[in-house]
Image (cartoon, rainbow, N blue to C red; front, side, top):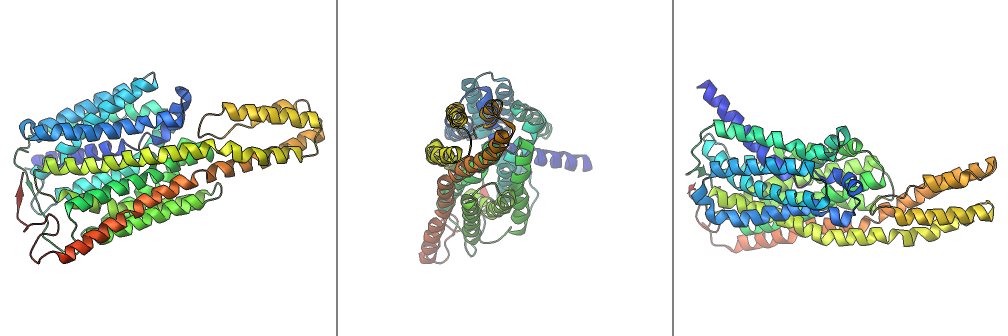
Length: 480
């Protein structure tokens, strides 16, 4: 008996690992993007498809799979999804071009769609009485999304960006082995349907709110990472340490907030996420401590809102597979919308930085008491460096200053050193502030959750007594 219980525990842990892995995969690659940009000689505008291909494939995979879900069976679909996800991870890890990498990311997304849809019924079929598989599934999803960037940063620092994908394959294999060893009948899983309570949230509103919250998360899980690595020049491990504030706060707050009103928690979480993003948007330059505090606030918002809205979205009619599929599609659609809206803003503002910085840089150069030939040569070399700098990265001012310093006298070299320090600070400040508009838009996405929840609260108060707040009907046990 103990052996069976142990086997069931390992299976449940493995299924949670699979859910966390699939949700983390949308963000785990973010800290590796600068390396990918350099290795494939591309731009942030193009490399963002490494993220978006996965999100889009998950949505399309869910839409394609759900009509056939009852014929295939959850356990078979989960194993197939884990297999495809693991094999595609290996393909991503050995890809030699951006096009191939994006193609394998799409295959990863299809595998992720299968495993995310099938994982909920498997959890429901094996859960003990009194446990809530929807809450377990939602918590695993929130923690996976939050921990992705930090995990990716550690792997990138210790190895390189390929390790992010290659490490996912054995994790998927472990989860598949545990599911295969535990013969669970998931053809008719019992899944709870919550009784109405104060602040209950209908499924449609929960999914819309979840999509908007996910769009806002692009600011914390994507823009902040680019800022830390490419602008503030933190190494991947250092950036991982900073963004680890998100999963830490998510974990602590999620456990403390269980069982409360989804409308209250969703609204509070959205406000905290927007507040954290707003603080980051106002940072004038490199201020790591303030960034850490702001990300703790973002993580607290994620811990309040994401699991609660996910659980409310799962509290729907239909089979567990369909419930999970709809929730996954809403979340991934939000991420795609966030990337589609924010990437052009982010790229445009970055490309405008030289126009804003060059007059100030030129003024600093020609205001320095250096011989005119040295000033002219330095200005020309700096312009060439600007033109050759990859998108979203700070220009390396070292080579231009080194070349000019070789021709200067000792006093002139001292003046050049002081000038370089001044210019480094000026350029970093300009680039940091170029993130401001896109971070504000991210915060606005999060705040759009509030009118959705307010409208839902107003409609709930107008509903006749005795109807189910979650699905618009009287509550009853739900069988898949």
